[in-house]
Length: 408
Image 1: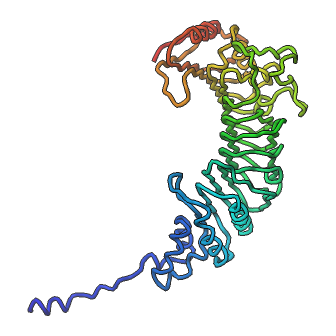
Image 2: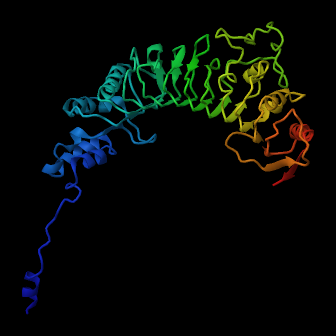
Image 3: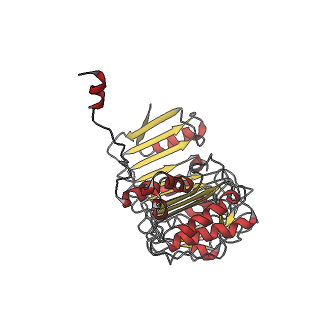
């Protein structure tokens, strides 16, 4: 057989679109992971792909990450056409991210959010990386399908923060947002994160989330939010940063001059208008795990401790150096006394983002235990950069409970 005949007798290879042969619902899901512009461009691949983009289960409008610069002006026309031509199918996810907007762009973004809600979105993300806040004006959020809401760089007004119309909402993340409303409320919320947010109100924002399971309140600017009772709470991570307005300019070593009277113009009264003496600690007293940190001079924890609740379920507690500033270590002593089932205590005294140079682990040296500390306490750790006088004071304090330390 000649080489030519051998070549002609070889089986013919027919190009097939194996991905395009997949069922529509799988292709709609796959396209939902692409930016909207890329998903639309798949219409030129083949006749099979011509209309698939119109029924994707997700929309990703703008950039895929923080580094990709997107201006609302540049995508307005595309998004408007996209929403007009899309089939009215349900959406699992909608993600909108941009880096710059103008004043007349706000109505467009508000309209995109309305479109997402109308199409039963379950996970909604809106990230604005511009220096100015983008406001969701007069936009009450009512959806029987929304489960997760993630907002960054957004201005939030009163009507938006009442989530009674979102009975399935479980996760709410607010990052670098400006909060103008007086109350954040949800009957269904389980996970709440408020990070680097701010408020100019002359009263405390009230947080009402009775079934909350986890809470993060990190570096809030303004009066510290008031936490209502959260009986199902399991974990809370609270950091009171330098922009907190609960500050006494005469603060000294854990004692603020308004502790026993209300004469200092820098101190807030010892009771707020919500009928509770505790701003934070009362609301989170049912938690099993707590991380409590505060900048020097931010006395909100010390103020709450004057009316310290019992942490009846608390098993893990992490505190920073703030709790060890007072000469008599009264803040540390009070919270330990009111944590009857505590199993693990960690004290840290180093800057955020650093790794400690010194780690010490403590254990009981005898079976005799003081009633002033939990009989269930098994692990005590102290982490710091240097063993200074503050750390030595803490070690002496804990040694009074027959806890001895070793270096690691």
